[in-house]
Amino acid sequence: MNLTELIIKSIIILVIFGVTLVIAMYSTWAERKVAGFMQDRLGPNRAGPFGLLQPLADAGKMFFKEDFIPSQANKWLFIIGPCLAILTALMSSAVIPFGDSIRYEGLTIPVQGVEINIGILYVFGVVSLGVYGIMVGGWASNNKFSLLGAIRAASQNISYEIAMGLAIIAILMMTGSLSLRSIVAGQESFLTWNVFTQPLGFIIFLTCAFAECNRTPFDLPECETELVGGYHTEYSSMKLGFYLFAEYINMFVSSAVISTLYFGGYHYPFMNTVHNALTGSLGEVTGHNLATLIGMLVLFAKIFFFIFFFMWVRWTLPRFRYDQLMNLGWKSLIPLSILNVVVTGFGLLYDIEYASWLIVIVMVVLAVMSSARAPKRVVQPQRS
Amino acid sequence: MLSDFGVILLFIITGLAFVGLVLFVGSLLRPNRPNLEKLTTYESGEEPVGNANIQFNVRFYVVAIIFVLFDVELVFLFPWATVFGQKSLIEETNGLWGWFSLMEMLVFVALLALGLAYAWVKGYLDWVRPQPKIPELKTPVPASLYEKINQKYTTPRPPPY
Image (cartoon, rainbow over the protein chains, first blue to last red):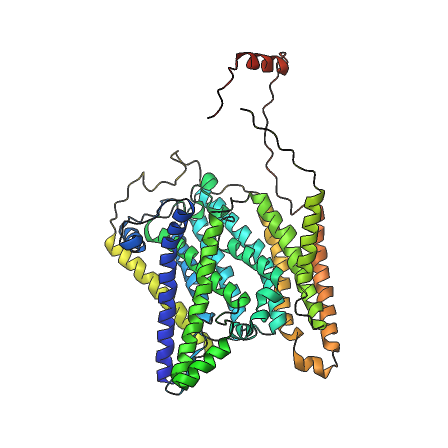
């Protein structure tokens, strides 16, 4: 690795950081706009055109607010908690392949923080570290609400991590590699996207991603009606900002991971045709770079769709009760994901890539049967 | 010059620098006027009772223990998943490799699934379901009498339009 490459690498790192932060910032704006749209109101529209300066104003407010540490709290852990949360959130975007590669002066540089052969394992590990930030912060606050919120968060995250890991394993069996780039490379044509070969795994992964990000309907750690603010009850100023920011960064990263694992990453239909046409007309270097750019735009479109999906679900589904949450995690998702791994294994032995559809079909049939058998709900006339 | 994990170290350093910078700038800008009331623990406006060393549901521990069991399973399955479909191994053993490794995995997963089934049957996975407390009224007056009186004094509402 020579100096030019190092400089390009540092630029890529800084750009990834910047993009992550800007997207996280504007996710807060988008969330409020989407909420406004779904509830038939305007949303933020005062600061700048369409309220576009709202995130900056929010950040400014975070900076100028007084930051106090409760006298009962453990001072250093109280500070370390939010720092850990945002640090783990920022670290996880390092291995996500955002695009194919850039050619520059005979060098071919992948558009990715770093290409390591255990990419998905790294993401998985760093995401599991994220629970420490919440746990440490909630415990250090020495507040009953915070402690309960933190314990709920930890319990929920570890419960859904297993199903998530098993869903990932089903993909690894198809690809045979832990590297995110080769997982993307394995989904070259449209019909081999993992969402078509692993539909059940995708649904399990999506559900677990919601739970890992502590988003509605799994936002019991910070549910306002019972726990005030959950684990960040005692936090104020920039430390609160770190917690909220970490949540949005996690949302961005998990959207990116979902698009990478299941939706072909930076691949899109007729990609090779476009690539050949561009390199044919504009030359090897410019054409290739332009094709990479289109791929990146496609990936970001997928990511934005999933961020929107997170918000859409937030304003559609009500929050679970805790026993429902645990039942869903332990009694449905984990057995289903184990079954998914086994069926995928048998399917691969017989060279049937779409074996996991079998479970989906059986499940749909069972659901239809049970709903057909269930006694019809009698519609009671309303009393006037 | 820089190994792959060196770049990740760069990432961590950049992240730390970002966090430190933001906290430092914040500490320059914000006011600092603590007082006794402000520094008390928040407990919905009441005087806080004791500290947060409270009892919580023991099931959180049980969940954590079962989690450790399954996380170990995951750790073993990750390397297994990468070698399961390897072409060279399958060719060397005339396709026996796939069956062999799948059966190995099945035995392993079945044992762990047995553990899950045990915990399930024993009821360790059942969270306490909140039971609504319906207040009971002990009175010699039968309920039908109340109903009668209610009906008697309810004036028929006009239609809603």
